[in-house]
Length: 298
Image (tube, rainbow, N blue to C red; front, top):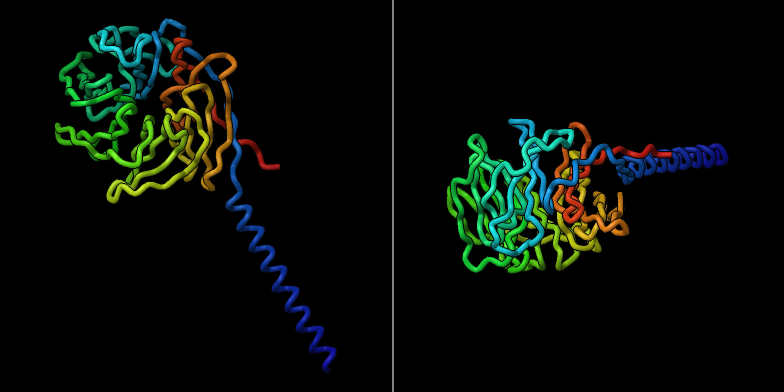
């Protein structure tokens, strides 16, 4: 009887171990980091003039591209916005003129916003013209823009280590601490994601408390941010010429480096429904589109 009892207990213990191992394996598989790759799909003609940012207007199914026309901080009045279709065909090179060095963009309703050196520029999309310029006192180099889906807009000042907020027609200083060359922005429901050129990192700031949380380091001169549509996975670019996937476990994977070609990777747009990443090449004067695909798990 004693031997039978011992055998039974051992069998139960082994079954428990096997069950625990299976649960651990299932959990590990569920949390395994997914692997991705990108492959060029198309590129525009090289008639753009130092393109810095690209954004999709879903209502009109067109792309808008900012052209700073070489000098990122100069108030020279030679910057402009281009229009392109989804396949990279330039519809109108100089659609809206009268800007200086426009960079990041955002869309609220029928208004297109652009960060332009020391001004927030508002443009009427239907009429294709500038309707207002809001000077930002003490600005250094206004850079990226993001909208939060509630009619609010956030924009970075890389040189002054600030993030401003536009709401209800008014601009306020939203954050001026804990920043180091903030560039790329992406607003979510409860946090603002920031890619920094000075800190070479990718972090989040709580929209209420403004508390900071590091999500990834060593990303170079952080520029564009895009959400893949897959929880925890974000595409972040290094302006110098590298594209990273930042993973849920706060690791990062390089998807592509274009540094040897001298091709920059600036402020990106990602169209999740077709897995298409749009990348302004800055001095190479084109937008390059890449198809993002997930690698199979071996």
